Length: 173
Image (cartoon, rainbow, N blue to C red):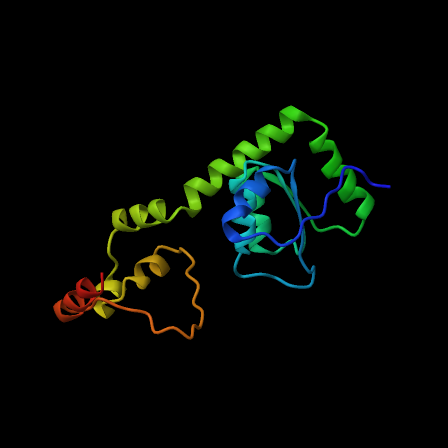
């Protein structure tokens, strides 16, 4: 009987932005017992759509911090689905509030999660003693209290640490 809810088959990654922009808002449920140390990347895509996000999860999560700092949605960690639903509906029925939250989310995501801005900010940061001593650029982020996240990969990433490395990379390009 619900006529205003649509279900979609899987879409390709290239189609995802258009699909996300077609919604009035985004709802994401995370397991409440899980405290994420890394915000799920889908939240960034949701924010970039310019629509408000409604998240349910642990009040200690990174997701909560981002949603609240951005003013781009509502984070809920209570136990009442009715209360959560009422919060979602109250925003979606108020076009001014819905648009304001969506705009705030998009601006925040563009300012804080674009590769260009992150790299630009990094270059402007003062090198730290740890970075110089260890010859590790990652220490600049850590010493400036910016989180970095490390993961495993099956790929062998390329690095440019010497002139020989640079020559090798240029040949590949």
